[in-house]
Image (cartoon, rainbow, N blue to C red):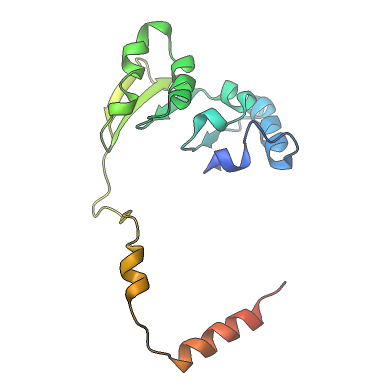
Length: 152
């Protein structure tokens, strides 16, 4: 099983000279006959190579507000399920639409949330910049040591 996280960075459809994209496209095209499975995780499905998207058997889509990203999901679903895909911008946290080979009926599902929830709040930059920090020689020495130990 291959896993490609933040795939839109490495498998971008506009990057024609990317070795990683060419290699992954080949794996996706040829891999199934050798039993290779793959998972692509992205926040921007519209930026993924069409060759890779054409090989995707099941799509799990969380809330998508961008119309081009919604269009990608719509193109994978049967025509009579447009009302389900139209729900994408209004899905709540933990809800998803699943379409494809691994589910008999394309469905809106509720995923179990982690408890405790990970902290994903934006940093409070102004508050952090306003803090005063006392100089600490041990921290300075530690940073200098780490920089000197780096292998370039």
